Length: 496
Image: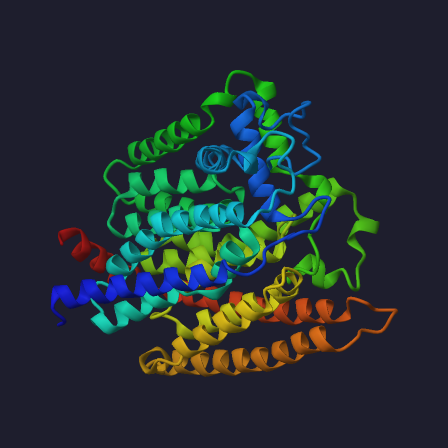
């Protein structure tokens, strides 16, 4: 066993290197750079700092003379608004013009861009990094130090999250970090803390609801096996309600205020998907013109039914046989179900199933390998529009080198799992080759005038097919997960 000083030094070195990679990516372009009048996600985040800093909290989600909701109106839950407010305070102290009311639209000085980038870097280092470290120590407690170090490296150097947060420009590291903290807390049997952290994630980004069925199923199933199940469920309910009430406190003064926020969080008018996202509705729209045959409300109901049916087996399994390993697969299965079938999905939503897959890197290497290929190729058109081709190639190449580490590719001893391993290996290899060719064609081959988006459409269909196969495989893996062994491991962790 490695000495504690060596272990701590290596973990610190991994974190410093991961931070340095983020810093390098942040030197490149971002969403909407110098493209008026609406710019992109960078301007949206800056504008939210401007609005939350200079208007009363009651007006943050309301259309007023100072808050034009048609120009990047807030459409995330209150915790994102509070985050924007505190980041706005920092920018206002250092460069007031960058968040000045009305006059700062499209503000893009070198110093303000540096300040904006550092708000993401510090959020990542302060929330996602500690959560990742905590999870690795908890879930892989019995593994060798080298395996712990590489698991942490894979999670922190996952290229899709780095490119979206530090290239494109968002704060997914906060909601995903809070979710990851909740997962680690569950591993320590700190269910109440896990509930608080996950509620905070939900109140930062509503897409965290992709994980909600898995959290509910695991905690409910676990509570029902205790001496006083009704009391345990009631305690969790009180914690959830209490956390939401604290987050929503400034908006609970009237039903109108609450509905005003909710109307911003569920924008049905945007349509069932954006751009060429690799999900069912986009892939099938090449044959079935859903928007022509179905109303918005009907499409929303169809999406709800399809999503629920897709994650139902995973949820039922965790209620009946909750286990930590099964819970991680359930996180992947439910979030993938939302990505494939839910309403209003964006390419960036692939980050949600990608997180639990990365947590299972030493448990199911090929599942992670397949999903990271899907994520990178599906987001390439978006990242290319942002001018991020160079960091895309660099971070992807670095990750491919990382995934070549020998013990990650060991074949399982069980014959059935070995067969699945080889099947997924062939699938991911085929996806890599076809995805590479498609994206090269997207960059260098002019599409026919009649089909200007042919490469994006074929890319979306290819990735969708692979994601369906990964989802079927992952559900089978969850059903095969042994709850007894995992519960024994949890007891050991608790004893430590």
